[in-house]
Image (cartoon, rainbow, N blue to C red; front, side, top):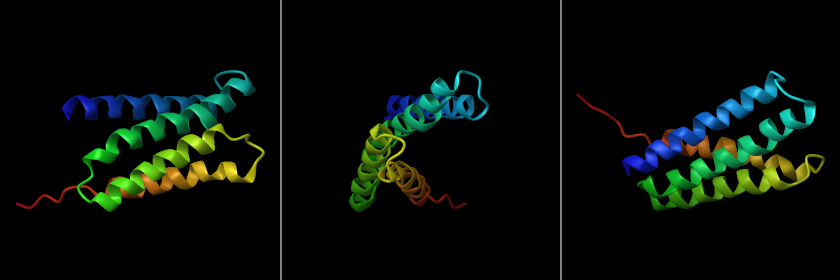
Length: 107
């Protein structure tokens, strides 16, 4: 479990580096698009996939798998296709699911 969380954390950080590199145009336009519009979403999708089994609610677990699939599949569609926007829906869904599954701490 701890190793899985570490892997998920590393994937998330690498994904954010890809997003930042694409936004700040560190490379050629083609590489920036590849990093920020494809690789970022694939890495986040993999991170969601790794997180899904740790969700306590089975419905949330399946929804997280769905969010991961939307991120990865959407990233593979040609960017001109309107349906490629499903990757953003998957990203938002996965983030919401991540926050709703946070344990509450009481003192």
